[in-house]
Length: 192
Image 1: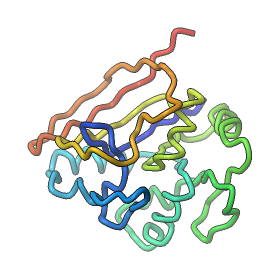
Image 2: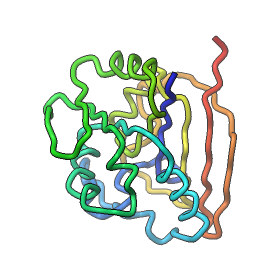
Image 3: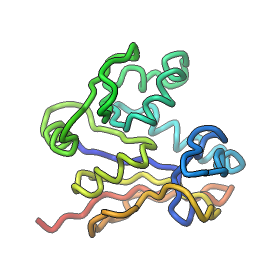
């Protein structure tokens, strides 16, 4: 069985919207984009590279895919994302030149549940704040790999929004960086 790990840059108050740049996601009037930049350090860079250079397939929402689609195929420092099968939750897209890619439409939660049962690489979910809500509501997340930054933003899309069901996790790894950022790896604990 494949595992699904949600990897997120997150503020202390749970915001995951537009960490990378000012124009990444301005929806809802969000004006704080690019909030992770000042916290970069070698310890965080090493942890990120370790995750980025592992073997995985990618599962994202349409919006995240459309942010990444014009950028990553032209980069050489993350070859694993180009090699990964990209599963994209979208009711409007069916094709891309960034291959390999599979578009999931209709009952996406059921399709992801089936995908988890198939043989293959584990699945990483980066960003995709709206889509992550669907995964959490249907208990499809097996692990969280969170980079918690020492700031609050007050508004924006949150990791745990409405519809999140009760879940328990255990910490399997934690790293404190010189900038005060915490890298936390949690796995889902299940009683059934």
